[in-house]
Image 1: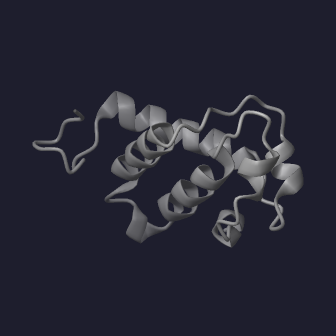
Image 2 (image 1 turned 60 degrees about the vertical axis):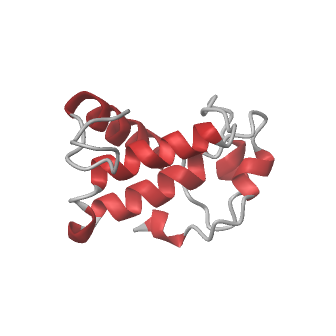
Amino acid sequence: MDAAACIGCGACVAACPNASAMLFTSAKVAHLGLLPQGQPERDTRALKMVAQMDEEGFGSCTNHFECEAACPKEISVEWIARLYRDYMRATLTGPADTGRGEGGVG
């Protein structure tokens, strides 16, 4: 549960030349998605957190890995890959509950 160590300090965002919040977002999505209690909202969580990141104006990961170097908790960029997998799965299969009506996004 290395991703659960994320303290939300923002060092990753400040260090990223793209100002990406991907490491923080991926840590939160991944550690909750690995827990049995996190499964019911796994797809919805991935969609909503990425949407919020986009709404806040953060960019996507550009593989500079400065975020990992700056992270005081040494969270790996490998968690970003897990976020991408969860996000793609949610996009392709559609979440059961998005909070936006009858099971759809929009």
